[in-house]
Length: 225
Image 1: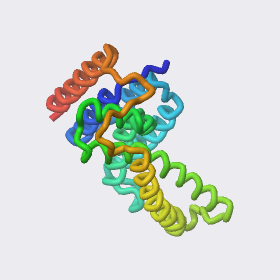
Image 2 (image 1 turned 90 degrees about the vertical axis):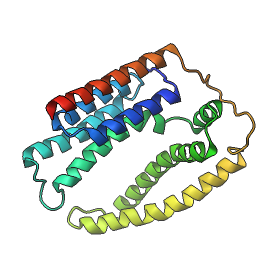
Image 3 (image 1 turned 30 degrees about the vertical axis):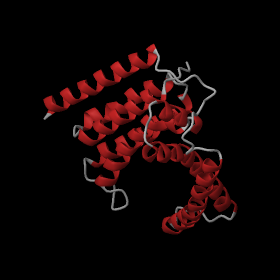
Image 4 (image 1 turned 60 degrees about the horizontal axis):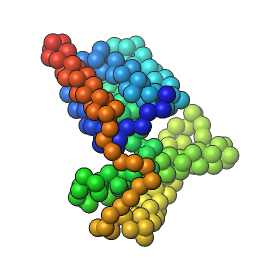
């Protein structure tokens, strides 16, 4: 199954998930969110990514359950597990947007007359994250080739990974901005897209379902309190 939704529908889902992640305090409700988001991802054709997300979420959920809310040693305190699980939920909600062509986002923002102060940063972000992910892959490959990745020295491995990625990401950000400007991203004229930009019936159905599920979670949260 590979259903394509409008960019505005995807943004609504992200906003709703962010509101749930910020408000929910019940662990049981948080633990059920990956399952709900997995359905949202699978119907859009992100089956392989969904399996990876569910595995990682399951690991952190098990760690929280086993630790009894006390964390796993000083390396993974409870606050770390608490934050990572919620960040994973937001990343799952943003997966369809992260993998979306930036040109489509520009066309949507132009169509809804969004200010450039919002449209341009979001467009750059869509192109930046996949590029940084590939940079991480290149850095890990280089470190494995030089045998610098070791669990025995985690701090050194982190330094060898983070430092080059930061410098390379800074350079990439400047190159992406220059490339986008040269292609006329800030041009006030009409921007077109090869894909038809339209809020269709399936988008309306998904928006209604997303709002209803969010309202249900808020109601269950109040009952739990």
